[in-house]
Structures are given as C-alpha cells and as structure tokens.
Length: 242
Length: 221
Image (cartoon, rainbow over all chains, first blue to last red; front, side, top):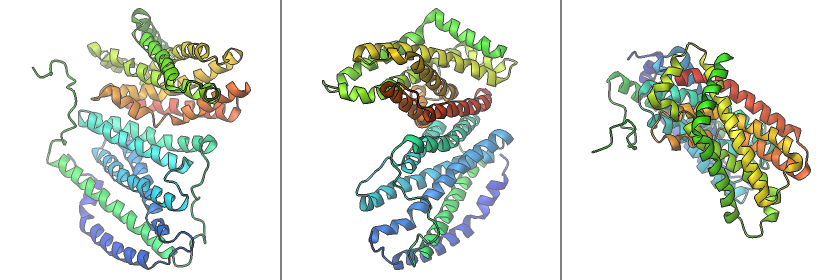
C-alpha cells in the first residue's frame, strides 16, 4: 500500500488535533455553562450549542463520503476510499447525535418528540442511507469490490438528499424546524458559546476522522485482515458445513 | 442503442420462457392487496377513499424489490454477468437495457395489481385509466433505474435479498412521494397535478443519468 497525502496528514495531526480539541472543549464547556438561560425555553435551549453543530458535522461527513467515493472511482487511489469510509462512520456518529438531541429539544419546546418536518425527515433518511452504506461495506467481500460498491452508493445517496428535500418540502409535512439562524436571531451572550460549539464539534469531527483514517491506513499498510465481516449464510457453492 | 435492445430482448425472452419473475411478482402484489383487506378495519371505505393510492404504491414498491432481487440472479449462473461485463459495449447501454426490462415487467405487474385492487375495493380507476398508466410508468421507471443499479450491487453481497431494500427504500422516497400524491389527486379529483408530475419526471431523469454513469463501476470486475 502507498501512503497517500491523506494518510500522512492524519498521522501528523494526531497530537495537534487532540490538544486543540481539549483546549476548545474546556472553553466551550465554560461558555455553555455561563451562557444566559433562555427567557422562554429555559435550560433546554442550551441544546442549541450542540445540535446544529452536530448537524453541520454530519452533513460534512456525508459530503466527504461522496467526495471520497467519487475521487476513488476517478483516481483509483485507495486513500480516497479510506476517507469515504472514515467520514461515513464519523458522520453516522454525529447524525445519531443530531437525531438524539433534536427530539429532546423538540419535546421541551414543540411538546412532541418528533415531527415529519422536511428537515427532520431528510436527516432521518440520510441516517438510514449511511447505515445502509456501512452495512453494504461489511456485507461485500473483497476490498476493491466493497470500495467500488460503496462509492457508487455513497454518490447516489448524497444526490438523493436534495431530491428528497425538494420532494418533501414540496408535499411533505409542515415545516416547523427553524430556518438557518439569521443575523441577530441569537440572544445576547449566546453568540460566543454557539460559535465555540461549532468550532469544538468541528474539531472533534476532524480529530475522529483523522484517527479513523489513520487506523484504516495502518490496517492497509500492515496487511491486517479486514475485520471479520458479520457472519452470514455461506454464499459460495459447496461451502456449507458438512 | 443496439446494445440496449439486445439486452432488453434477451431479458424479455428469458422471462417469457420461464415466467419466474413475472409470476412471483404478480402473485406477491395481488397477495399484498388481499392482505390489505384483512389488515384494514371492516368499514374502511373512508380510509380507501383517501388512502387507496398509498396502499397501491406500497404493493408496487414491494413487488419491485422482489423482482429486482431476481434481475441479476440469473446472470450469476454460468458467469453470465462476466460475459455482460466483457461485452464490447458501453456498459451504460447494458444498464439501460436491464432497466428497460425491469420497467416493463414492473409496469405489467402494476397494471394487473391496479385492476385487482380496483375490483376488490371498488375503486373507480376506469375513468382515469390512461392517466394512471402514465403515473405507473413514470414510477416504474424511477424505481427500476436506481433499483437496477442497486440490484447489480446487492446481488454480489451477502444477505443480498435484505441488502436491496435497505439500499433502495431511503433513496426512492422522492419517487414514492410524487407518485402517491399524484395518484391520490387523480383518484380524488380526476386531474393530474403538474408539480407532482414534474417532480416525477425530474427525479426519473436524475436517477437515470446517475445510474447510467455509475453502472460502469458496478460491473467492473
């Protein structure tokens, strides 16, 4: 295996990204705790400092998955496939956080756990697309084939997002999710923790991505076998246990 | 173009001689309609007025998954898939041939299921039959385009029968949404709404282009 630019970058970033993440996390935690409490929503409004930032990271991860897949198909360089895999896994983590934190906030403010709002629906579908993406990888034998299949699905999955959004926005449920925050929509003293949250969670995303990338390139370099794919019924003829 | 027709012809002939897929899809989707009868409350006429289109499309989606799962199963025997991949032709056209065959089969199944549904639940489809056929065709094309691409992927994984719906269902939502909305508007008001129709056409074209381009990498061995 040839170590690509991405592999080297991931290895070099190990310490700097960890230190930056720790420093930012500390400041972020203090900023969130000392941020003023919302007059209407109360303490639950502090999810604001987590939820949109996670959503941003999740969408970034899925964008990188499609980009990595496309670059892999184009250049046939394995490092891009590793990027796609790593960002899909990290993206799923952040998407899960979005889907967990959203309902908590929704219950507190909208009075119900879930609403079939376009944004919520598309994010949920996206989560399913990427779980299927990861399942597809673990159910496909042969690393080149898995990489190619995954790239094809990753690209289609990302293209389906705007179509899904467009379709659901056109005919789907009522939109109750707030639009992107415009200028001045944050109360006094809320801008700083919000910005810190964005920065910290983006750093966390990058740190996890680099670690996952490094793990995958070590695995490729040292020829470690792929983690045993989930056991399923034997496919090849004649391989049934006798 | 010749490649498209050759692959389409090959698939239709082999289907004509065995009838495996069409018969199993038909039986399955008509059975789904019968299951609806038992699943719905006894006095479901109100529900059927508003939900008929949705119920029909559920049966269509399931039938299409069933059929697509078999679309490449035959090609695995005797390494026929490798033969297709080795053919000196643009693989995009091979894809279009397979997708056309799947669309035709699905459309046939849809038509018979719609007839059974209309008779069983006394839904007046006769007056809008032609326009409903257009909707079924557009939906079948959309389902079969990404469906054929994903079927070629799923057939060479473990748990292939499970893999295909997991891959397909979250991606085909725009088609389902457009088709169901347009169908229920057609059944209720007797007119085809244009935003839904436009959505279906746009999504069909987008999925066809993407699958046409990406099929190359799926078949690449």
